Image (cartoon, rainbow, N blue to C red; front, side, top):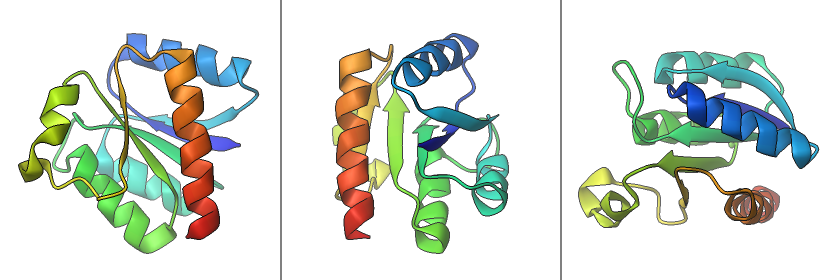
Length: 123
Protein backbone atom coordinates (compact mmCIF):
# COMPACT_ATOMS: atom_id res chain seq x y z
CA UNK A 1 0.00 0.00 0.00
CA UNK A 2 1.25 3.50 -0.84
CA UNK A 3 1.19 5.70 2.25
CA UNK A 4 1.75 9.43 2.68
CA UNK A 5 3.10 10.54 6.07
CA UNK A 6 2.11 13.99 7.32
CA UNK A 7 4.11 14.52 10.50
CA UNK A 8 6.58 17.06 11.89
CA UNK A 9 8.29 14.97 14.57
CA UNK A 10 11.41 13.24 13.24
CA UNK A 11 11.31 10.45 15.85
CA UNK A 12 7.71 9.61 14.97
CA UNK A 13 8.64 9.58 11.28
CA UNK A 14 11.50 7.15 11.90
CA UNK A 15 9.25 4.90 13.94
CA UNK A 16 6.50 4.98 11.31
CA UNK A 17 8.92 4.24 8.47
CA UNK A 18 10.29 1.22 10.33
CA UNK A 19 6.86 -0.15 11.21
CA UNK A 20 5.42 0.40 7.74
CA UNK A 21 8.45 -1.20 6.07
CA UNK A 22 8.06 -4.25 8.34
CA UNK A 23 4.38 -4.43 7.34
CA UNK A 24 5.37 -4.35 3.63
CA UNK A 25 3.89 -0.91 2.95
CA UNK A 26 5.56 1.79 0.86
CA UNK A 27 5.98 5.38 2.06
CA UNK A 28 5.53 7.52 -1.07
CA UNK A 29 6.06 10.86 0.62
CA UNK A 30 6.69 12.68 3.88
CA UNK A 31 5.54 16.24 4.55
CA UNK A 32 4.99 18.39 7.64
CA UNK A 33 2.27 20.83 6.58
CA UNK A 34 -1.34 20.56 5.48
CA UNK A 35 -0.76 22.49 2.27
CA UNK A 36 2.04 20.12 1.26
CA UNK A 37 -0.11 17.11 2.19
CA UNK A 38 -2.93 18.26 -0.09
CA UNK A 39 -0.46 18.78 -2.93
CA UNK A 40 1.07 15.31 -2.47
CA UNK A 41 -2.38 13.70 -2.26
CA UNK A 42 -3.22 15.31 -5.60
CA UNK A 43 0.06 14.44 -7.34
CA UNK A 44 1.01 11.01 -5.98
CA UNK A 45 -0.68 7.63 -6.05
CA UNK A 46 -1.67 7.48 -2.38
CA UNK A 47 -3.78 4.70 -0.83
CA UNK A 48 -3.68 5.93 2.77
CA UNK A 49 -2.58 9.01 4.70
CA UNK A 50 -1.21 9.01 8.24
CA UNK A 51 -1.58 12.57 9.55
CA UNK A 52 -0.65 14.24 12.81
CA UNK A 53 -3.33 16.36 14.43
CA UNK A 54 -0.56 18.82 15.32
CA UNK A 55 0.85 20.23 12.07
CA UNK A 56 3.01 23.18 11.14
CA UNK A 57 1.40 25.92 9.08
CA UNK A 58 -2.08 27.29 8.50
CA UNK A 59 -4.05 24.05 8.38
CA UNK A 60 -4.56 21.64 11.27
CA UNK A 61 -4.47 17.91 10.70
CA UNK A 62 -8.27 17.78 10.87
CA UNK A 63 -8.72 20.60 8.36
CA UNK A 64 -6.19 19.01 6.02
CA UNK A 65 -7.84 15.60 6.27
CA UNK A 66 -11.29 17.04 5.57
CA UNK A 67 -10.04 18.71 2.39
CA UNK A 68 -8.31 15.52 1.24
CA UNK A 69 -11.33 13.35 2.02
CA UNK A 70 -13.70 15.65 0.16
CA UNK A 71 -11.49 15.93 -2.92
CA UNK A 72 -9.71 12.58 -3.21
CA UNK A 73 -11.50 10.03 -1.00
CA UNK A 74 -8.21 8.80 0.46
CA UNK A 75 -8.61 7.20 3.91
CA UNK A 76 -6.88 8.98 6.77
CA UNK A 77 -5.50 7.80 10.10
CA UNK A 78 -4.93 10.55 12.66
CA UNK A 79 -1.87 10.49 14.93
CA UNK A 80 -1.65 12.33 18.26
CA UNK A 81 0.12 12.44 21.58
CA UNK A 82 -2.98 13.98 23.13
CA UNK A 83 -5.43 11.09 22.69
CA UNK A 84 -7.78 12.45 25.38
CA UNK A 85 -8.22 15.63 23.34
CA UNK A 86 -9.77 13.53 20.58
CA UNK A 87 -12.84 13.15 22.78
CA UNK A 88 -13.27 16.91 22.61
CA UNK A 89 -16.01 17.75 20.10
CA UNK A 90 -14.35 21.08 19.27
CA UNK A 91 -11.71 19.19 17.25
CA UNK A 92 -14.49 18.24 14.83
CA UNK A 93 -12.99 14.91 13.87
CA UNK A 94 -15.04 12.97 11.32
CA UNK A 95 -17.48 10.58 13.01
CA UNK A 96 -15.63 7.55 11.67
CA UNK A 97 -12.15 8.92 12.45
CA UNK A 98 -9.40 6.43 13.17
CA UNK A 99 -6.95 7.77 15.76
CA UNK A 100 -3.65 6.19 16.87
CA UNK A 101 -1.75 7.50 19.87
CA UNK A 102 1.94 8.36 19.84
CA UNK A 103 4.35 6.80 20.38
CA UNK A 104 3.12 4.50 17.64
CA UNK A 105 2.90 0.81 18.46
CA UNK A 106 3.03 -1.69 15.59
CA UNK A 107 -0.09 -3.65 16.57
CA UNK A 108 -2.16 -0.46 17.03
CA UNK A 109 -1.07 0.88 13.65
CA UNK A 110 -1.65 -2.46 11.94
CA UNK A 111 -5.20 -2.62 13.31
CA UNK A 112 -5.85 0.99 12.24
CA UNK A 113 -4.64 0.23 8.70
CA UNK A 114 -6.99 -2.75 8.45
CA UNK A 115 -9.89 -0.53 9.58
CA UNK A 116 -8.90 2.15 7.05
CA UNK A 117 -8.81 -0.45 4.26
CA UNK A 118 -12.31 -1.57 5.15
CA UNK A 119 -13.44 2.07 5.07
CA UNK A 120 -11.79 2.54 1.67
CA UNK A 121 -13.79 -0.35 0.26
CA UNK A 122 -16.94 1.43 1.44
CA UNK A 123 -15.98 4.84 -0.04
